[in-house]
Length: 444
Image (cartoon, rainbow, N blue to C red):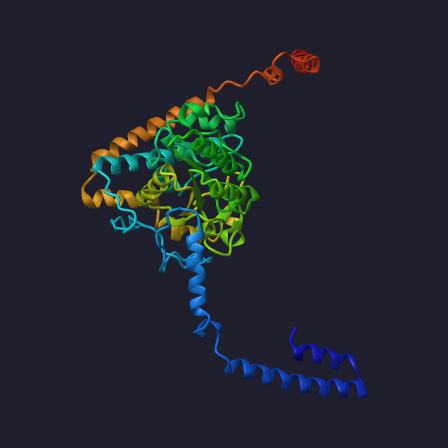
């Protein structure tokens, strides 16, 4: 509250002699404030002071000398992303119009076969995702978290990994699962309620989906610390969203990864909406800049550019394998669908926002490039459409033939040698379950 407003409040509450006194105090306060302002205006600002500027540079140089021996992040200055948290240039290799551009720190020259393969990956992943959403609407799944719009971030980063690298996903990394060789139908079991994941994480070095927000980032860091102690040259990657960046688990993971120089990549898919909360509610600076406070580099990449996501992730994992520690990659993208099938984004997002991002569609972007360069013809796209239809049919048949689990299996493998209490609970539940069969028989 200003001096003037405080004095004015005193005048309102006073009367008679007190009111006159307050008026004089107000006038005196105004004179004091004016004099102070004039004095401050005559003094040079700290930013312009020649005595202070060298000291700041010296401090920064000293800080760099004492920092851990990690490679600096490539410069990411300039204008462009439109993020409310800051104006920063995206690392981009393919424009929304399908034109190739170069980046001095992330050179990437894919073969025609690689480009067609990346397009196929994204197209089939989107078809699977759409099929799963439809199955949920038909009552075949209890819930589904769509990746619509995030295909480039997932396929690009997923294809940058080696077989011996290990992945810790959330519950939306269907594209990464595809890259790791996980059968897409296995992803549906948990959402149908017939299993807790449906695949062995060690078969594909792809951990089970994690529903608890942010916890997998800690798991990944611990695993990476173990990898380093074992002397392996593999890398670990943890996926999380902009909303999860507010979780304490993520901050703890950053701390441990930095202190122990763990070979882990923190891959944040910033789709700009944590359910109904925008990124501005998660961070006052671009998310990738948070890495600086923990002592390792961070970069922001165009999350709708599959080539840039691949090149940046590949550089990050190679850096981790070389013993240079963690890195934060922020893939700036957009969730074009709902958070899950239980969400209605029209209640908190403008339609114009989605239309704007549809023009940056990651699949259409690569298709334009393939067509402009003549690297894919009509036969390629027609064959892919047929493959997509076959996948949709396979997914529908698989989900409807999934067997329900044995309800008594919950009592198995609780104790290695059995337990009297578990045996008692098993018997009680068996009797309870059998009573439903008796009721059904009586009703006939």
